[in-house]
Image (tube, rainbow, N blue to C red):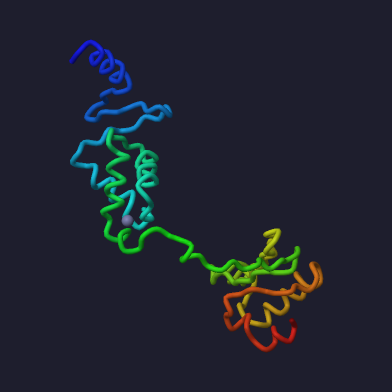
Amino acid sequence: MNYQGKKRYKHNAKDYFWDELYLFKQCTDQIIRRCIPEEEQQQILEECHSAPYGGHFSGNRTAAKVLQSRFYWPTLHRDAQVFYQQCDRCQRTGNISKRNEMPLQNILEVELFDVWGIDFMGPFPSSFGNLYILLDVEYVSKWVEATATINNDAKTVQKFIKKNIFTRFGTPRAIISDEGRHFDNRSIAAVM
Ligand SMILES: [Zn+2]
């Protein structure tokens, strides 16, 4: 190595340090990352690109994910790009383009107390004879109305929404449920 080369080598070496079995690098963003030997690089790229949580993103984003996982090697960006270009699935699907766009829908405007979500939880171990919790969550404010109930039937629902919702918050425009029989039936429809 010539004089300049030695100087640069020494300068670069300052960012690296050994700890036990591993070599680490303090990167320019001050985050310490483990340096990955060649034989482990492909597996890390695969995890960061093709794993179920990888998302098959482009070379740059895959490299970003590797860095985010606190791994480093000098040819990372180039390797991630090559990996992305050679990924079978990415070859087949290509980039997401205009063609894949879904038409935009206007968001339905709802006011406070217009929409409630309703659901039963339980059965739980009996508490003063109660086995269920009937839960009503207001969609805009996330305000919660809840009560312990003995049964999880339509009559209980009817009583609850009359007493806790209609009289206190006004008649909602919609109540959203999982369409279980205790919610989706004639008597509730009649109340609504
Ligand atoms: Zn891919």
